[in-house]
Length: 376
Image (cartoon, rainbow, N blue to C red; front, side, top):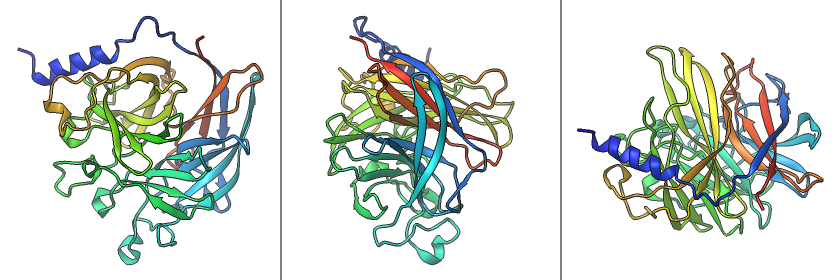
């Protein structure tokens, strides 16, 4: 007799992949890839860990947040110039950097300095520009071992704190590891709704209460959560993750999680699933898939404390738009950030996906740039 978990997974997966026949898919065409050199340095800090990206149309520049835990330099957001057009990609360049500050105006502390200094250790995984006034919003997935909960904060463009968004109690770490988010698998995504009145976010992997993480054969379930600008939960829908995209070497680790969200113009969401597998201890290979998630008709699960034990949940439908499967034995790119870019002269939108090089001195930071044609 099949297990409850297997039955639940099959039901969620079937519902997730059910896309109305009339929904025409968009067309994504890869224009090219721009790269920053491995071991690049700007203004005295190593350029790495780029985990979130957004576009400043007024300046024609991108902001990219580093997930540096104030160990290689201060918590920071880089300003990036990308040179591309419909005919190809010509390059990427860091042109500025902004230090993010804590609510009291002090610098964020690194892991080693926190016991003496107090404050919070950042692990910033997403950044967005406020569509109303251009302010920075950024998300940290926290550090359970240090007692630092995930947070979403707002800052002025000079990096000074202006507000902290109240978040659901379920996103706080529990010392005993029986509830809340999993360590290093908490808030990884942030996206403004098209009207700018609300934000979407999600944990990278299921909350403890919502079941196991993805495995070789089964995917986990996360909650796509829509928050008002004051932190109220407006809606939550289940999203079914794929199983591992890559196979690890014998006895080693693998994963698959939700790395980023981005609002589609009609209210659907782009969802970037990123997977890693160890080829050798602490040596990883990466793959990613870009999905279009449709929340129409999905069950609102905001009042359900545990998805793993509650049947009858219809998750968001998902359609695969692009598969970043690494060729051959390539290590692949650790893709983590999504942003819309400038319009092309022919009217097509552009989409930029950025990789996190994990501060490897041998790994480039890469920007994948796509032209996007919306269906009529």
